[in-house]
Image (cartoon, rainbow, N blue to C red):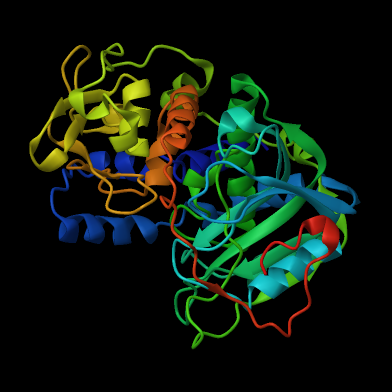
Length: 423
């Protein structure tokens, strides 16, 4: 079993958050243009670390020993609009009602980046951040075209595990995109920085287990969705011309996450993740300095500007309102910026072009232009929390856009204790 454990640990390392950057470094690639980066990404996505029989064997044995009691109910926090980072509403319902909610929203229409967001969590004050997320009640995994779900469903049904799967909004023939929800046997505490780190570690292990059992290629399930605050979107279709998104649900046993972890080798978390959560000093990052001129009034500042400022990673002003910043993935660059040096123009943020006022990010290294949520997830969680508070305080009437959601009025409404969200 020691050999199989070593292969499982290797597969986990080859599919973690930093795996792509390590892949580029091992090839001696310094990807400066989009075409070369996309070519390297396609090569990376074709790797098969999760298809190792030994890895699948460890995964199946661990999951077979992690079958919990039958699922009854599930608690979530729901935000009525994707762009809302506060005002989350606690929702409690039976497992069947949770499935009915997803089935209803699968027939809704929501443009990309719009609609409802939710988290399977208990939240202390409705703010969508790690500091406000007290417990996780389910594990959600996201697949973005690395394989389909049929093999995994067969395993889950053979073990009698409860699960809900739905196609994502961007799913199409030839490019399967889907998510899986596993209700937990017991809530997972995330009320402290240390417990958030424990959740990220547990998530990494579970992601490897289910990715191996699904037979996924490349990184398998998305490694960047491990934050307790991560917003999830029900699988709504993108236009009225699209078919309703497919939703499958099984009733049965919950996932005993503690038992699963006890049967697996511990993951090796990237040092940056440890530094983000437990407040250690950030290697290569300058101390927090005074706010630049663009932040003298929070009203004009985007959420990214505020977050980089709170983290002490904001640099000088550039042309056209852009600002130099220290890249959150600086230590993964081929040539990391040494400690004490100012942020260079190779990593920048720029003013927001939307009413939500989130801002934009770009790095000339292999990091590219990830989403705002991914950038925030890579920054120190306490800095992001403070930035969100300032950003909320800077909201102005009419500064939020209205999501375009259309739902067939003939569909049944949600149960009262699910607050009627989604109609």
